[in-house]
Image: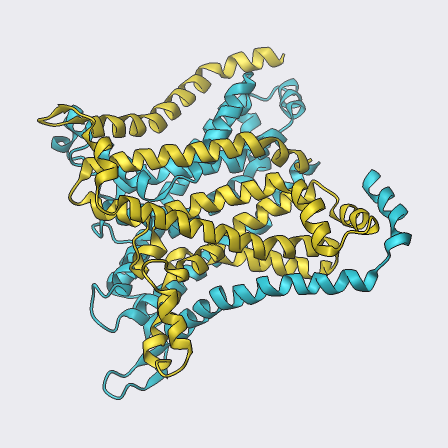
Length: 275
Length: 299
């Protein structure tokens, strides 16, 4: 019965999957062709060999990686203790934290950056004689714009919340902590030595998602006038089309490798707690 | 099960009720303080700015709804409607194709195919932004590979247009739909189909009277999610079309960076507020629907 059913659906299934494969693979293949088959030059790999020598590549990529590292550190430092504490006690706060972490989904990045821009303008307008002004200047230092880290942490909250929530759901935090405590461990020790090792999958998951978010982020950085990786690609595309596509292809492959590693690593642990 | 048992065993030994509560509060405080600072202040600044104007002569500010009215007029209204139209069209198309792909995968006998498609969808759904724009510029742009190969430019093809953007948006929206709808399709039981068949229903009748009504909340929820995702997208459009297609995100960006008349910053904030309202509406529709479809899947 079931086999008969399957057979009757098969031709359309093939057509749908073939169409989807075509649509999703052609742009990737075409991008590669675009970068190596330059009109009037023939086959050349210049676009790829030039990347490292191009002005701004190394500095913008480093900036993005530094921003990502700072964002991951801060978002985990804020979220992990809070989420673990919610499991241990203060369950009344859980809906509050869930809503707070979902709020960034309601404010699109472009609207968020409009708000940040407004606040940053208060610096020169209203605060120039107060000590706060120095803070405003220093968080906008182009070498390391901390204001971007603040924005990225907020934007990462929904993903991190979901990743950590799934990880914590798969284990019994209270038992672990109480066992550790009754064996004589202090609170920090219980957290670091008993809870965190069990959360490794969720922590990696959250870190990878945040890394992908920061590396690809364009909106906030561009509108605040900084030049991390994604903004650099756009800026360089005007003069060097091949190069910008080549960098896009590479950054794609790197991001995909990261996310695939994540899917391979976290896939099993993520599907487990659903049932 | 074993977990609760263990807890009962341990409880009399530890039982530090007070000790458990104090750290609970303290550990959440930094998070809430951070969000208030980094998210609350900009959000309030946006809200405040959307309702104030500054008199250029005296420098005095006053509260008004003029910005909001302006954000719903002329070029701004065109952009807002353009965004709504683009998001709606691409969300509808993605819903249909996402459902087809997901159904093809779910009914497949090959476990590996399913895993591969779902993993790829997870990756592609996160693949918006600048690289996506450039991949399509290289493929279908003015000097793109397919454009040159098939001479599409002579046939009137233009990637930097409404339909061009729709084609690009499908690239991350369809995978998002596949991810959203697959659990719901898994929830459709084979027995329902068999029962319908035994009662003489055709495949079309089965879909019309049984499968689609059951899937409706998930489909609508997925559609709304895609709509919100397309509505908020900025990087792809900015890297690709500049401002040749009127979109609200591009208008806000123009106004913030002072590319238009001075003094339009607050209209940009009013436009942002419009966007927040639309996104809030999306979430208000999506969350109850998601809960509803989750109920079906749990049974």
